[in-house]
Image (cartoon, rainbow, N blue to C red; front, side, top):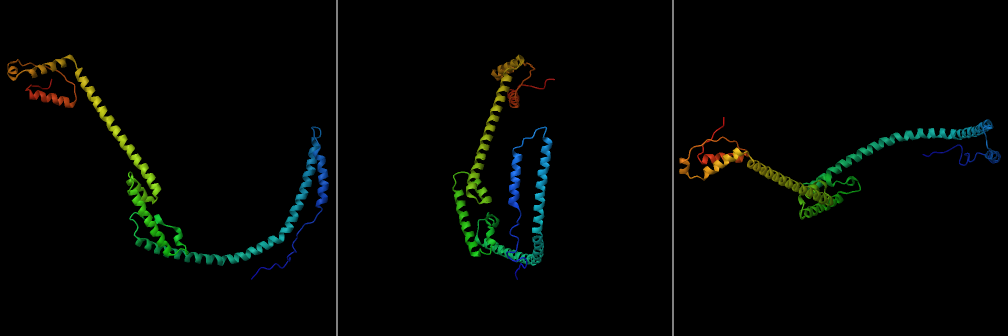
Amino acid sequence: MELKIISPQEGGFVKEIRWNNEELKAEISEKMQEYKSLAFTAETIQDAKKDRAKLNKLRTAFEDERKKVKKQCMEPYEKFERQVKELTALIDEPIRLIDSQIKEVEENRKVQKRKEIEDLFSGIGFQTFVTLEKIWDEKWLNVSVPMSRIEEQMKTRMYQIGNDVMTIKNLPEFSFESMEVYKKSLDLPMAIQEGQRLSEIQKRKAAYEEEQRRKAAEEAERKKQEEAAKLQQAPSSENSAHAVEKKQDMKKPEEMAESKIMKLDFRVWGTEEQIMGLRQYLIDNNIKFGKVE
């Protein structure tokens, strides 16, 4: 089955369209030289427009003739092209049918081979964090790649992963962070780099928290000193009360029994710890106290 061109025979196609090309070229070139030397003014602008119209008309005439000849040359080809496309359309239909069947068979083959690869992966003994998707190579599904080569590549990958794990465990620092990254990527350089970055973040966080604790302790100590200073600067009546307390505290028990009982109302300022200490002091020294109405 072959395509045969009956008419025109080889060599029968139009090889050249002969016309008075050279004659017209010489005539028009000479005429165009006249326009190159012209200089139109406001008084001769109408002449310029007339000349432009003549030149446009001449140019249009040549273009119309060119299009006419092209159409005549293309008519037999366009007819031939339509006829050939009708034939190729008849051929395309069974090609599509065959392609669909080939594709279906190929897909079934890939499904079966993937199942074999999954079974092979399960029996190799990879580390628990390694999945088939992490080491998958799409080329394994090609017909040209036998299962023996896939097994060899899997084992090589497994040994490499084992060496990578040992390298990470021997790191002096950030081995935990690197290992967590490696479990997801199986990329040793990236895991070490990312692990180091995460470790640095943890160190900066710990230093920041320690600095915050130090500042909080300093602030608490400062407030404590301020409260102590305020207590020392309390009104004179308070100072008198403290003086009485101190004087009573210095007396012996028998002297306190013989002393006249005094009553003194005063107000104190202090922290909760200081107030409770004062209360305990009154109790320990048998000093009666109560709420001032």
